[in-house]
Amino acid sequence: MKLGFVVQRYGLDIAGGAELHCRLVAEHLAAHHDIEVFTTCAKDYVTWSNAYPRGTSRLNHVTIHRFPVRRTRNIRRFEDIQNLVFHSRQSETLEHRWLQENGPYCPKLVNAVVRRRDIDAWILFSYRYWTTAESLRLLGRKALLVPTAEHDPALYLGAVRKLFHMPAAIVYNSPEERALIQSISGNETVPGDTVGVGLIEHTPHPDRMAAAVERFRLMDPYILFIGRIDKNKGCDHLFRMFQRYCREAGDTLTLALIGKSVMPIPDHPGIRHLGFLSEDDKAAALSQCRLLIMPSQYESLSMVLLEAWKFGRPALVNGRCEVLEGQCRRSNGGLAYRNYEEFEAALTLLATHPELGKRLGSNGRKYYLETYNWQVIEAKYNALLNTVTTGRKET
Image 1: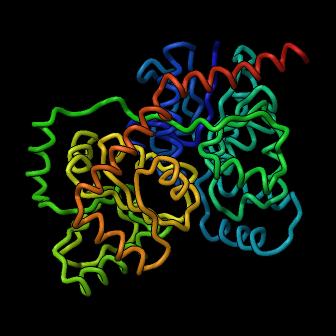
Image 2: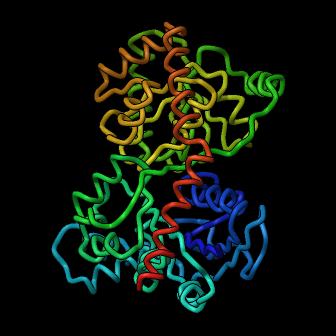
C-alpha cells in the first residue's frame, strides 16, 4: 500500500513523544509499504518557528515532505483563547480557532494531503494539533487516527469530541487511553485496537555501556529520570519528594536526569543533570540504574517505561496516572505511589532490595517482549489499515 503519515514535527533530533512514535512506526511499516510523511518545517513545539528546510527528502527508507508553518504561535493570543474555551462554554467556531492557534497552522501541508488521491490510506498522529484535526476532517474514513491522548481539557471540546467519530479506525496506546476517549466522546462504534509502539532496535555492547557509566561518574545506587524536565511531567513534585527523602533518610542516593530542561533544577548534591544524551549513552545509564522514576500524571503510553523494561530495570511511577499504574499492574514490572509516604516506602524498598528490583525488572522485560515487539505491532497496524481499504470498497 501507499501510506501517508501526518505529524506535526518529524526528525532524528526529535527524540520523544508522538513524533518519535510516528517515526518508528513509519520506518517499520516501510518494510512492507511505500511510506510518505507530511510534516512541517517546525522543530519547536512551543513557537512552531520554521527550522528545517522545506521540500522533500529521504530518511531511513521514508519520504518526507516538509511544509512551512504560516505563522508562529502568538503565546498571549493563544492563552487568551484557551482560557475562554477551557473554562467556559463557547461556540465550536471559537473551539476551531483554538485548534488553529494551538497549531501548527500549516495550510500548505493540508492542501498537499487533500490533493494526494494516490495515497491508499493515511495515519494521523496526535488529535490536538491543527494539522491532524484539519486533515482528519477532510480525509475522514480514509484515515487511521493515533490520538496519543491523555487527561486534557481539550478532550472535552465539542469540536474535538467529533474528531473521534471521523476515522476508519483508532490506534490506541493503552486500555486506559481507549477508556478515556470513549467515556468522553462516546465513539464505541468506531473500530480500534490497543497497539502502542515498539522501541529503537539497538543495544550497545556491554563494555561500551560500562565505559559510559564510568564517564558519567554515576555510582550505584542511583535512580534515573528520562524525558523533558518539566512541571507538566511532574518534575517539580519529584524534586520536592526526592529532597525530602534525602533529608529525612540521610541517604546518599543519586537522582540522575536525562533530557532537556525547561524548568529550574535544584542545586542539590544528590541531583545530577546529564543533559540530552545519545541513544548509546542513555542505554548505558539506564542499564545500570537501580530503578526508573516516572512522576508524570499525564501519559497515553510511556515509551521510557518500556525502555527500562527492555533492560530489565524496575519502575517507580506516579499512581495518579492511570496509564502508568496500568502498565505496571499488567506487567508486574514496577511499583506505584500516590503520596510522599508511599514514595518513600517504595523507593526505600527498591533501593535496598536489589533482588526485588531484578524480579520486577525481569517481569517487565517479559511483558515488553511479548506485547510490544514489532511483529505484533505491525500486524495490528496492517489489520487496521484493512478497515480503511475495505470501507472504501464498500462505499
